[in-house]
Length: 269
Image 1 (tube, rainbow, N blue to C red):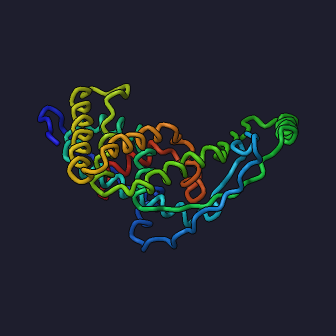
Image 2 (image 1 turned 180 degrees about the vertical axis):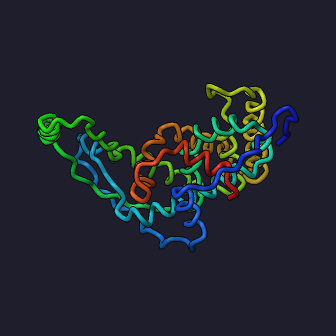
Image 3 (image 1 turned 90 degrees about the vertical axis):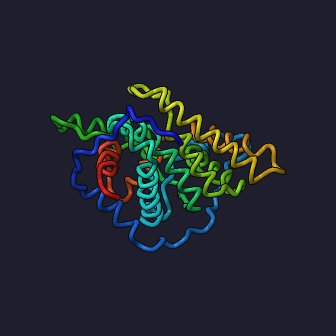
């Protein structure tokens, strides 16, 4: 993709990696974590919507979390290897990465064929929460502890699994994944961007390159380009907070993804 000379990458500063980054980085050097079997989910009763609201957690958080961490490192390495991305100022890079890290990660999970299994978890009832809050008030806590973010719901996890299944059913190639990632990365509609027209042009070029590749390689499947764009539309239903809570909190605790992304963006991966 063509690059514009007017946008320069700000590379004067390199911050040393934190413990959080080192955890992520170390996982990439390890051999692939043992592959997970296809998850078995209990289907909710017919006509019942309560099943999608159940809270779930990873059955093997260390294994799945390490696999996701390795994919995140690979994802940031891919992003930093794109010449046109490197030519953007650092603040523009951060706006893009903070917005798209989760959909890029899920695309990476699909490309690496990462499987994960979840289990239903018991959450405190409304009465239990009320009693806990009352007890804290009676103990006169000057600074009550902030409640932990809620665990992902079964419906949110099903959206991720549905996306992965869609990608796997299409047998997306490495080049197609790269063009899809470019389309996701170069989003010109984000607030705070200055090089809007440049970024818009890059997204258009990624889509055009995907279309030309599909027409060349899949001449007998005229609907494939549309199917790949459906994949992109499915990414909109995936919440970044859900991804962070599901894959990263179990292994590194509460994490500020913005800070971690900045460190990884500035570090030498």
